[in-house]
Length: 429
Image (tube, rainbow, N blue to C red; front, top):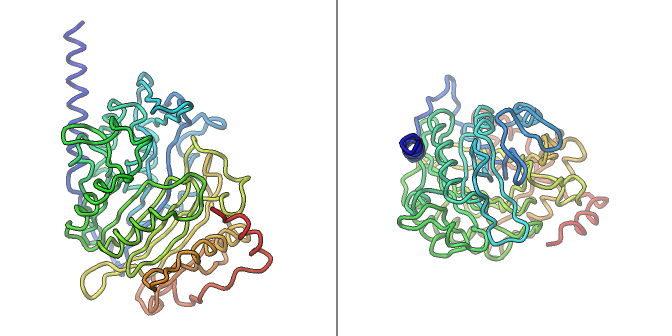
């Protein structure tokens, strides 16, 4: 019996090691499409996890709010997961085990998330191919849970997943930028996130599994340094950070993301999540910052639909890139897509409901205008389908998809007086 247990343990250890090797291996290059116009599209969403807190995992689907098979969970939003890069923050342990011990994280009523690997395979099949793993739920089931996540994510590397970052078997792995080749362009990606109660047992060390801590100045500086020194045409930083429920970017975010990442270190795209609500969007020089995308599809999160106009939705974004004369990829246009029912079955907010959220987002963005003129909150122009559009100067002259998208672009109108009072009252910190 002991020999059987030893063989099982050895097989599990080999599987974890194989998953880690796959996770850290260079991504396969994506072949340029026939007739490609040079546009690269990045789709961004916030927090994702297909299970409720402390619920058993099931290979067939999700039991929260009534049973849903995997395809049901994304049926309302699948058509919009259509980028060359489709990013999500995977805020859960990935495991097929129901015998893992939960880590209570020194909290009175902790949330512990785990999702069956069949759920991850479904999300990847839908198109998600870049994953942030650094968040306050990555260690919900101690190191055993982390190893499970690494194993299952690693198994899909090169089979849909281009990059996954933020955790590892040591600090070097957890802070290592991931490279992917998209339409002949090298893109670098890395992720960092908060650690619940700054627990040292969750913090990656020289010989210790865990994640990097976005609250640690030393960790944040090292993550930025490694990303900045990576040769790439475009660099993406994912950060899990912020006070839950607060819609205003806090001073720490602005100092770290706007100044350290965008202005000082030249990170092209900063993607924020964790507050469970949408925060503002800004351009700092050539860099784009999303201070929080809010929830996207997480059955362990609250039903936000009854909240106020500033907190009742999540944000899906589509960023359009084109190569500049210096060989770098430049941001040329951005779409903002409000989504709802993020606790159950995500779908777009359309028509007047979507437009109202675009105006609420613009209200938050206006507060991000920097006094030095280096940063400006984006004002999205409401579109007929309830989304918002922002085009950089000259984008209407770009060839192909970007030019068509921005052909009739006009600057965003003022917030309608009938909405302004409601938005101002809701969008307080």
